[in-house]
Image 1: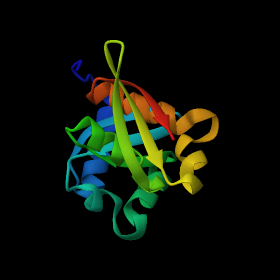
Image 2: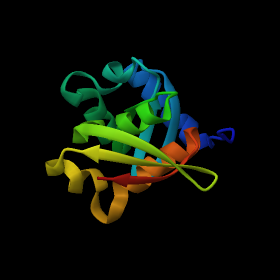
Image 3: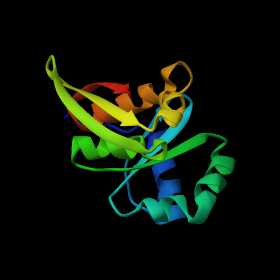
Image 4: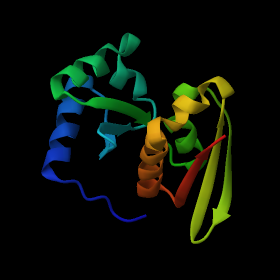
Length: 141
Protein backbone atom coordinates (compact mmCIF):
# COMPACT_ATOMS: atom_id res chain seq x y z
CA UNK A 1 0.00 0.00 0.00
CA UNK A 2 1.28 3.49 -0.72
CA UNK A 3 2.07 5.59 2.33
CA UNK A 4 -0.81 7.90 3.21
CA UNK A 5 -0.05 11.58 2.85
CA UNK A 6 -2.54 13.91 4.50
CA UNK A 7 -2.80 17.61 3.74
CA UNK A 8 -3.17 20.31 6.42
CA UNK A 9 -6.93 20.56 5.94
CA UNK A 10 -7.39 16.81 6.41
CA UNK A 11 -5.19 16.80 9.51
CA UNK A 12 -7.41 19.58 10.88
CA UNK A 13 -10.53 17.50 10.24
CA UNK A 14 -8.94 14.52 12.03
CA UNK A 15 -7.93 16.66 15.02
CA UNK A 16 -11.43 18.13 15.33
CA UNK A 17 -13.05 14.71 14.96
CA UNK A 18 -10.81 13.12 17.61
CA UNK A 19 -11.33 16.03 20.03
CA UNK A 20 -15.12 15.93 19.65
CA UNK A 21 -15.58 12.15 19.69
CA UNK A 22 -12.69 10.69 21.67
CA UNK A 23 -12.32 8.11 18.87
CA UNK A 24 -8.94 7.54 17.21
CA UNK A 25 -8.86 8.11 13.44
CA UNK A 26 -6.74 5.97 11.13
CA UNK A 27 -7.57 7.92 7.98
CA UNK A 28 -9.78 10.67 6.63
CA UNK A 29 -10.62 11.35 3.02
CA UNK A 30 -12.88 13.67 1.14
CA UNK A 31 -14.82 11.80 -1.51
CA UNK A 32 -17.99 12.66 -3.41
CA UNK A 33 -18.73 15.77 -1.27
CA UNK A 34 -18.47 13.70 1.90
CA UNK A 35 -15.88 13.41 4.66
CA UNK A 36 -15.12 9.79 5.43
CA UNK A 37 -13.44 9.00 8.74
CA UNK A 38 -11.86 5.59 9.17
CA UNK A 39 -11.73 4.86 12.90
CA UNK A 40 -9.76 2.15 14.66
CA UNK A 41 -11.53 -1.12 15.53
CA UNK A 42 -13.75 -0.78 18.60
CA UNK A 43 -13.97 3.02 18.29
CA UNK A 44 -17.08 3.29 16.09
CA UNK A 45 -19.55 3.70 18.96
CA UNK A 46 -17.49 6.54 20.43
CA UNK A 47 -17.29 8.20 17.03
CA UNK A 48 -21.00 8.02 16.19
CA UNK A 49 -22.52 8.51 19.63
CA UNK A 50 -25.94 7.35 20.81
CA UNK A 51 -28.37 7.51 17.90
CA UNK A 52 -25.72 9.24 15.75
CA UNK A 53 -25.86 12.42 17.85
CA UNK A 54 -22.09 13.14 17.67
CA UNK A 55 -21.90 12.70 13.90
CA UNK A 56 -24.96 14.95 13.49
CA UNK A 57 -23.26 17.69 15.54
CA UNK A 58 -20.09 17.40 13.45
CA UNK A 59 -22.14 17.61 10.22
CA UNK A 60 -23.57 20.90 11.48
CA UNK A 61 -20.17 22.19 12.56
CA UNK A 62 -18.36 21.28 9.32
CA UNK A 63 -21.33 21.79 6.95
CA UNK A 64 -20.45 18.50 5.27
CA UNK A 65 -21.89 15.00 5.06
CA UNK A 66 -19.91 12.61 7.26
CA UNK A 67 -19.48 8.86 7.03
CA UNK A 68 -17.73 6.89 9.75
CA UNK A 69 -16.28 3.47 8.90
CA UNK A 70 -14.59 1.05 11.28
CA UNK A 71 -11.18 0.02 9.92
CA UNK A 72 -10.27 -3.63 9.52
CA UNK A 73 -6.90 -4.99 8.41
CA UNK A 74 -8.81 -7.76 6.66
CA UNK A 75 -9.87 -6.46 3.20
CA UNK A 76 -13.09 -8.49 3.33
CA UNK A 77 -13.89 -7.06 6.77
CA UNK A 78 -13.18 -3.51 5.61
CA UNK A 79 -15.50 -3.92 2.60
CA UNK A 80 -18.18 -5.32 4.93
CA UNK A 81 -17.76 -2.34 7.29
CA UNK A 82 -18.02 0.22 4.46
CA UNK A 83 -21.42 -1.20 3.46
CA UNK A 84 -22.50 -2.01 7.04
CA UNK A 85 -25.74 0.04 6.91
CA UNK A 86 -27.04 -1.88 3.89
CA UNK A 87 -27.34 -5.28 5.63
CA UNK A 88 -24.39 -7.11 4.04
CA UNK A 89 -25.17 -10.74 3.22
CA UNK A 90 -21.76 -11.73 1.83
CA UNK A 91 -18.44 -10.41 0.56
CA UNK A 92 -16.53 -12.15 -2.24
CA UNK A 93 -13.00 -11.34 -3.38
CA UNK A 94 -11.65 -12.29 -6.80
CA UNK A 95 -8.29 -11.66 -8.52
CA UNK A 96 -8.37 -8.86 -11.09
CA UNK A 97 -5.26 -7.61 -12.85
CA UNK A 98 -2.59 -6.61 -10.33
CA UNK A 99 -5.10 -6.47 -7.48
CA UNK A 100 -8.47 -7.83 -6.51
CA UNK A 101 -12.15 -7.13 -7.10
CA UNK A 102 -14.76 -7.27 -4.33
CA UNK A 103 -18.45 -7.99 -4.72
CA UNK A 104 -20.55 -7.05 -1.71
CA UNK A 105 -23.98 -8.66 -1.63
CA UNK A 106 -26.53 -6.66 0.36
CA UNK A 107 -30.20 -7.04 1.22
CA UNK A 108 -32.03 -6.47 -2.12
CA UNK A 109 -34.20 -3.73 -0.60
CA UNK A 110 -31.01 -1.75 0.14
CA UNK A 111 -29.12 -2.37 -3.12
CA UNK A 112 -29.96 0.95 -4.82
CA UNK A 113 -29.03 2.91 -1.69
CA UNK A 114 -25.81 0.92 -1.26
CA UNK A 115 -24.75 1.89 -4.81
CA UNK A 116 -25.87 5.51 -4.35
CA UNK A 117 -26.86 8.13 -6.91
CA UNK A 118 -24.62 7.80 -9.97
CA UNK A 119 -22.57 5.18 -8.09
CA UNK A 120 -21.53 7.68 -5.40
CA UNK A 121 -21.18 5.06 -2.63
CA UNK A 122 -19.25 2.70 -4.91
CA UNK A 123 -16.78 5.51 -5.65
CA UNK A 124 -16.34 6.21 -1.92
CA UNK A 125 -15.86 2.49 -1.17
CA UNK A 126 -13.30 2.19 -3.97
CA UNK A 127 -11.40 5.26 -2.70
CA UNK A 128 -11.16 3.77 0.82
CA UNK A 129 -10.24 0.29 -0.39
CA UNK A 130 -7.57 1.60 -2.80
CA UNK A 131 -5.89 3.44 0.08
CA UNK A 132 -5.80 0.47 2.46
CA UNK A 133 -5.94 -2.78 0.45
CA UNK A 134 -5.09 -4.32 -2.92
CA UNK A 135 -8.75 -4.06 -3.98
CA UNK A 136 -9.11 -1.96 -7.13
CA UNK A 137 -12.78 -2.40 -8.01
CA UNK A 138 -16.06 -2.77 -6.16
CA UNK A 139 -19.52 -4.05 -7.11
CA UNK A 140 -22.74 -4.34 -5.15
CA UNK A 141 -25.03 -7.28 -5.83
